[in-house]
Amino acid sequence: MAHKLNSMFDRIAIGLSGLCLVHCLFGALFVAIMSASGSAFFGHDVHQWGLAIAVPLAILGLVGGALGHGRWEAVAIGCFGVGAMGGALIAGHGAREVVLTVLGVILVAIAHALNMRWATRRHA
Image 1 (cartoon, one colour):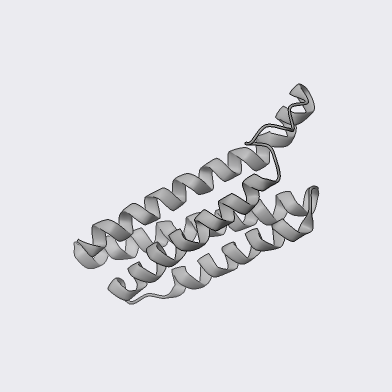
Image 2: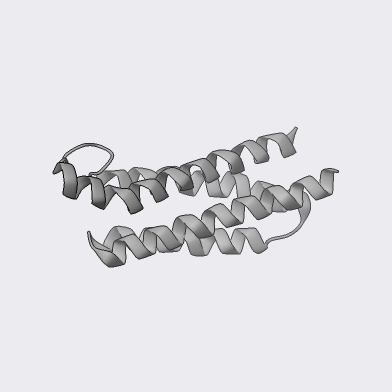
């Protein structure tokens, strides 16, 4: 049962990482074209909310998985990713924010994918 719960957290985290990538990579283009920077999806608060959701998901999914399969590399990768996302919050709008956020969500998604792979191998 714990394996299924951890897998669910990993899948949710990967999905949110994908949404974050869409936000970062296409948000600037949409804002430039539509001049709609006041919407919730493109506002700066979305980063704070995203990190507030990412941290507990990373803890639940990655740590829970590592406790089950015994490999802690995904936790380390996830910590670097969450750290980069946190750095993006203080970087302000601009190229550094985008680079840090994209790097962070990619690392977090990789960590959750590895976590799922290792958990599946252990339970296979």
